Length: 202
Image (cartoon, rainbow, N blue to C red; front, side, top):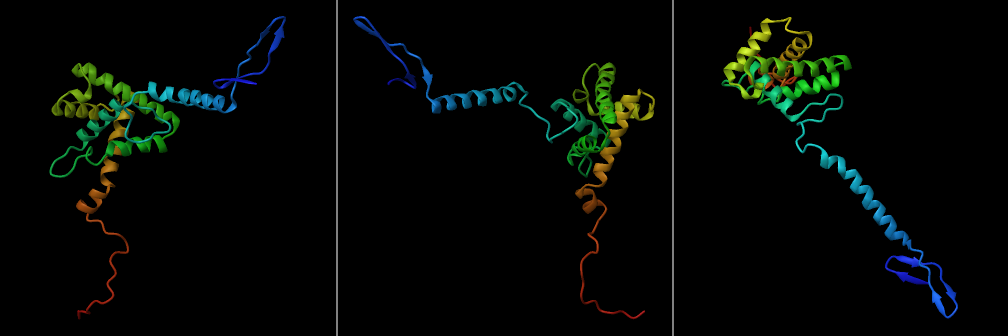
């Protein structure tokens, strides 16, 4: 038995006056398994290497959007409820709440309509301004929002996208911790227990 690195000579034969050794290289089992695992690991890593390094901020199961779509939604939500002396919708991540609600609670038909409306919104803004929603000024964004708010029949998918985003942005803002505790003065029910309170006569 001869060994050649990790391979084994498994047979030999002799001819007249000389010996001829036939080498049949068989891989050592342990090395072969290691090499196979390395190949599998490399194949598994290829898709992640080819994907865009940037991802959206929250995991979405059913709808697929790009990071630039998330940025656009953040600016749209901020335009609907801008920052003043209180935080704006963007500060409170209202756009992420909207995305999560659409991904978890909307039907497949409405999810597809929302994504279609998102694309229609970008096309609408591009025709009006010549650029994307995130590139225009705050005043131009307000004009776009005001126009869409008035034009209820601006296209079924476009109207569905805008009205859904607006409604979910307001819902996210008015149910968040900041709004409930700092603005509404919400207190947990049943409230603080007071075991001893002095009685007052009427």
